[in-house]
Length: 225
Ligand code: 5GP
Image (cartoon, rainbow, N blue to C red; front, side, top):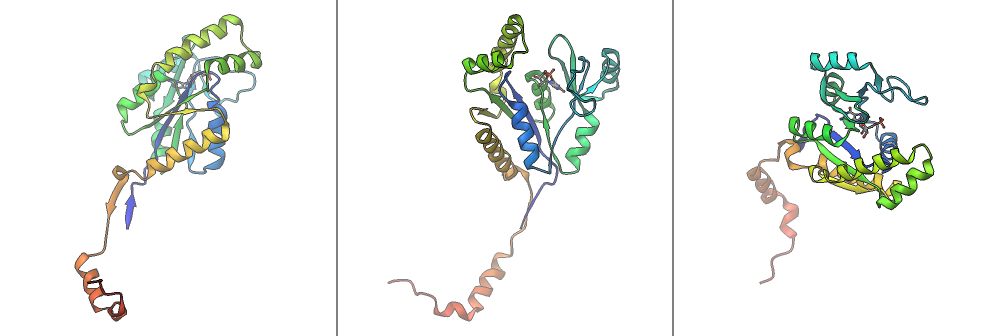
């Protein structure tokens, strides 16, 4: 009998702009009841389509700084336009302790901080198949100015330089295939030997004794001489 540790896995998913990590995560969540997405705090303004408490907890920069001083974050970073983004400590710790796996969708700086704190974190980086494809996706989305697009590219190239800090890279050229690859990663990680708390096997002498006493085995093949 193998007894695995019951604590959940902490999983970081980062990725370059337009790599489709939001869609990949949504699909993963819909397929796994024991997988949760941590809701971050941010000081950036809420977008029209976002819901407070679901997409982020939206707070002012002052509230955010108070929470930093209280030690409320596992990690935090100033990501875009100097806005703060942070992972809440209490919620994530409770979710992991209850046996749930928790995804943090955070940037490369936050990922470094978490890896230092919890070296066993599973770090996955999602990439678009090419930067030409990223360009096509950004332009077809039609939400950014030329300047914003160039800025996104600069950030993306910097992020790609941090890939060595991750355990896995998944190229998202097809959503279903990318989700299947992440599924495979999560399944393999659960089977790691260092996750085993206890291996209890039956006593060797008893098993051999039972075999010797078992009449059924008297008729088994004799070795060829
Ligand atoms: P957006 O403003 O577009 O929702 O997110 C911008 C970036 O912030 C994304 O790259 C996202 O991964 C990152 N991010 C979101 N939440 C957190 C967080 O709690 N911590 C860190 N370090 N980055 C975050």
